Structure formats: structure tokens, C-alpha cells
Image (tube, rainbow, N blue to C red; front, side):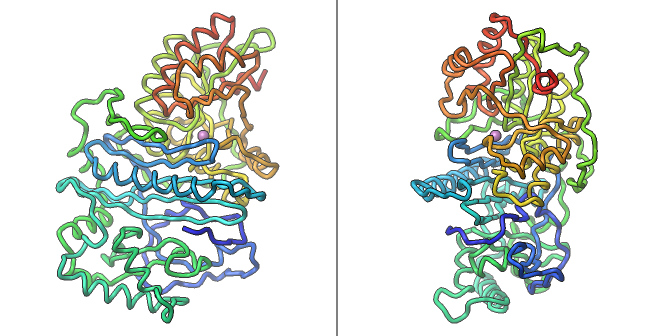
Amino acid sequence: MALTGCSSGSPDGPAASSAPSSGASSAPASSPSAAEDGATATEGSPEWPRTPTLDRMPFAGLDVGTISDNHRATHLVVPQLAGAEPLNSRLRDQAQRRAEQFWSDSEGSEVSVAPPSLSGSWQAVGVSRDIVGVLTSVTEFAGAGHSIEERTTWFDADADTVVEPLDLVSSDSRGLLEQRVRAAVDALPGAEREMSPSSADTAWEQLRDGDVRTWFTPEGDLAIGFSEHTILASSAGTPAITLPASDVEPWLSDAGRAVRTAVTRPDVEAWNAAHAPATAGPTSSAPALTPPVTPAPTSSSEAAPRATPTAPSAPSATKKPSSTPSAGRGRTDCSVKRCIALTFDDGPKPATDARLLEILARHDVRASFFMIGSSVDAFPGTAKKISAAGHEVGNHTYTHALLKPLGRAALDAELSKASTAIEHATGVRPAVMRPPYGAYNATVTTAIEAHGMRKAMWTVDTLDWKHRDPAKTLAIVKKEAAPGGIILMHDIHATTIEAVDPVVTWLQSQGYTLVTVSDLQDG
Ligand code: NI
């Protein structure tokens, strides 16, 4: 999709778009503060019905796959559920295609304002014994413009198939659905009716192709949402139409009714009871994927009793971060000892972290983990285990967004949502923060400090995410390690975990004491 020239760098972003909608209108309510001053282009958009999302996702058998390229500022996280392979492969394929499109689009284009970036996160939309729905949001930044694409993917575990948008209604009702969708889109302010394709043509094509968000309102109305700049101009935001329950009811298929129940009465326990993996063990036995994809093994013990779905992100800039639990060990004096810090970014990820924790415990060393808030919300149990083992947990934003192009409000949301997720899971508010891709400017630094954190960069880049070779990771550490250093690795890759034992063994043989980043910064 082409980027649109938003004049503002402050999208309200996928992470901040979880307000459930109770309205059932197909017309947008205009925002009272819709100032057309150019600096608040996003805030000036009409208020469309929003896709409702479940705040926390304690799914049994949940893992995440990541498509990432740190040199091309790409980080897409997709959920992977045990026993839901059609859903998993659909989500992986969508993300992979999107990343490849982004890489080919940004090839050779020198953007001077800010480097292009692509970040993707997800949330659950609905769940029942047999149904699960996932909202994926992908944000692309280039220069001063950004675009957000969102779509829902529904999965029917009983039929072991993805439920396409048109499968929500019976096949003989599709003609009626098409008429009503076209009429509703035609009625939208700003809809293109004369040109070909018209807004209605595009809407129907998007619906057929599955490039839409579908959900049901609490009243049972069918809602269909579209990405920016698809059926309306980008200034209109992300349009959505709703079709009244009374009209839709006779058209619904069995799958459509099941999806409606999963949204209006979500029940994660029912899913977990039916789909808990028979054997839980953090072994990496997933099929190999194409190289940039982290395979998702099927094990998780995250299905803890559901936490109260609280809305995160109360501004908490004034709240003092707690200090890292020292797990009974005394603070190391790095002015006397040869200290070095191991850091692991982009988790938590249950399968790889379980092995990593064993290795670190065997060597009796502590490390720092810079976690993505949305993954913490998905795997609070793993985040808690890491913190409880005495490791430091730092903030790595909520969606792994490139922070430099963001306005202050979006920056604050990325930081506070991640800190809240971490505090919720571990009981400790993070004191350190690492900007994704190591990219920051004065605004970013100011925001990090305003949230009570210190920025933590690195001195040794193992490039583990790129070469995926434990021997190379060790070789780079041997070459570049120095007292006071900070080593960057990524705990979402099995090949990184393989490197940790040799790396720690070698560092200790050189007389290094392994500490957390905060220990090092406190000197
Ligand atoms: Ni990262």
C-alpha cells in the first residue's frame, strides 16, 4: 500500500486503539476538537467504531513468531497457537508478505527525514471454545508519513480452518450482504461514488480478499472496518460500517454465529480447557520456516488464571521505578571488578527463555532483558519467572516501534504501556529502557527520562539475529568485550540461546563479573 502524506508524526497507533465500541452507527461522529491545524491530523479524523480487543491474552499453547530485520527497522510479531496451524500459517504468511513488500519498496529510497520502519503487533479480539480471533496491526513509517493496516483473522478450531469474512454469512446471503455493504459505504461522508473503482467497489474487494476487520458489536451488529486510505482518503482515518443485528441475523452461517459469541461473550478458559497442549515442554521442534521467521514451538504455561482486564497506560511519569530485586546477592562494585552486562532484547518468549534461564542459573549470573510490552501481556508468566530469578527487566516499548518519528503522545503511549505491562507481570516497574533499533533523538531521550527510566544502549553488537550462528556470536564477544561493556543479544532465537553457555564460560574465564545494566550504570 502506498504511504500517505500525513503531516503529523503522532499516530494514535495500534497499541492505543483498544477502546471497545458500543456504538452501532455507520456514520462517524465528528470529534469535537477536530482542529484542522495540520499538527493533529490523526486526532481530527472522524471517530469510527473501533474493533474491541481483549487486554490480556492468557492463551494455553500461545507462542509468538517474529519477522525482524534490525538493519531495515522491521519487527512484526505474530501469535502462534498450539493446534491452530491454519491460523498460524495465515498470520505468518501475511506478515512475511508485508515485510517483503516493505523491503522491496524501501530499497534504494533514501529518506532523509527518518528511516522507514515497519512494526507489527497483535491483540485477541474474541475467543470461545472453538473460535479465536486475532487483530493484527502493521504500522509503516517513511519520512514524515505513516500508514496503519489492521485486519482480523478468525479461526474455527472445530473445522480447523480460517473463517474468511464472507464465511460469516451463508453462501446464499452473500448477494444481500454485498448490497448492504455497498449501500453503507456509499453513504459514508467522503465516499467516492463516481469514479471507478468506487469506494463501494474497493470495500467489497477488500472484504472478499479478507483485508478487513470484522467483529460484532455488543448489540450483535456486524461491523466491518477498513484500513486507512483504502475506501476513503487517509485523512478520514480507519472507516468502519455496521449492519444492524436484525438484518444480519438471518444471513449468519454457523461460523458467523460462533464468531459473534466469541466477540460478545469472550471465554478464554473454554478455549484453554479444550486446547491446552497435552505435553508441555519447552522444546524447539517447530518446522523450519524461511530464515527471517522465528519458528514458534508449541508449548506454553502462560495460561494462568486470567488477570483482571485492566486498561493499561495511566500516565505514570511521576512514579518512581522500583529497584531490581537483587535475589539475595550483594551489589557488585564495578569500580573494583571487571564488570560486563549481558542483555537480551525482544522477548519474552516462553520456549527460548526457559532454556536461557536454566543456563544463566547454572552459571549463577544475572542479565538484563529488554522486553516488548505486548509480548509481556501475552506471556506474563515468563516475564515473572525472569524477574523472580533476579534478572533485570527493562522496557523495549509496547510494539517495538521506531521511536524517532513519533510525536510525544505516541511516544508516551509506547513507553507507559510497556512499563505498565512489565509492572503488572513482574511487580517491578522498569528502571532502564532500550529504544528499538537503538534509534533515538533528544525527544526520545527526554520522554524516557520523564517516565523515570534511563536509556541503556550497548557496546557489543553480536548480530545474533542476522547470522544465527552461535560460533559467530562467541567470536564477536571475544573480539569486542571490554570492562564496562554491554553485550546485545536477542532471546527470541534458539541459536542465540545456544551461544549463551560458551559466551558466559569465556567471559568468566577472562575474569569478568556478569551484572545487570543497572548495576553497571550505578557503577
Ligand atoms: Ni529490539
